[in-house]
Length: 195
Image (tube, rainbow, N blue to C red; front, side):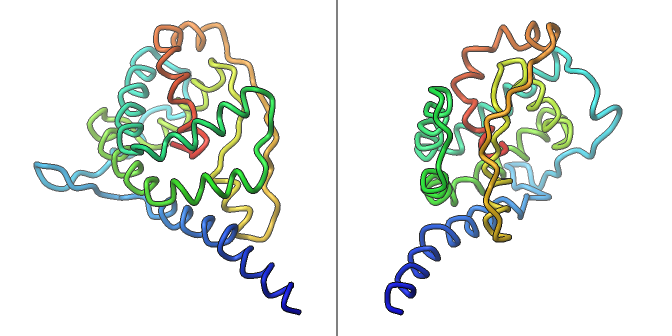
């Protein structure tokens, strides 16, 4: 009985709590962010949100990603390590994923605020950003792993899907991303957090 209580406590502190903390920061996206000039609201989706990538989209994406990386600070290192493991052919295990979620839990809130402010500055909706991120990831040949979806699965009592499915980008997507490939490859781990 004591062993079960110990296992339950460990599960609470090392699995459930990190997932809840991560999701708490994740699920409260700032509808408004504070800036020097006052309160700003990210733009609403307009036009064809799911349209093909454009050069302007990729440039805006890169500028937003820079600000998000800066907001993540030193906690970005753990996410980068998991990404390096994925690139070397290793699927992240549940323990690795929970360690990263625990480390970045508080930073995700700051990164989301930076993302909202950068999206406003770039006049890009969050919905369009997500579509562009998917296209950029395809162009870079990246697997579609999202820790925010995995954390939601854990919180609902399901095992997360940590498969490394890779979709190939179009020639146009690869050409648009190519000028920024080095920088985007270095910050690609932010995509693991849905940023």
